[in-house]
Image 1: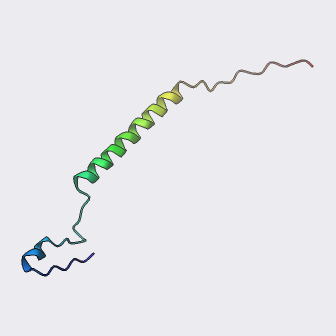
Image 2: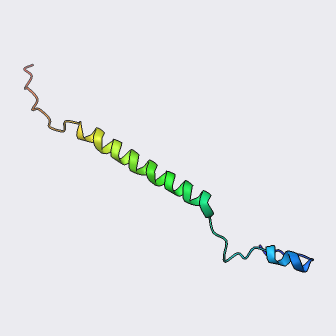
Image 3: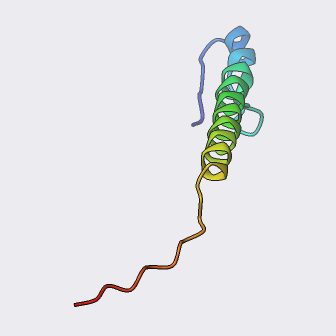
Length: 63
């Protein structure tokens, strides 16, 4: 995106594609995604810790 402005004073306002950054909003979105990922992994780990994986042997059935 190359912006060409006619007035010389406005050329200072032209954006350089190599220097545009995500800014504060990008940081906030990234931080919220990170915190959400941490929270869901912590909740999943807690839930999986409550599961009993030991199976009891089946009793033979006489037919």
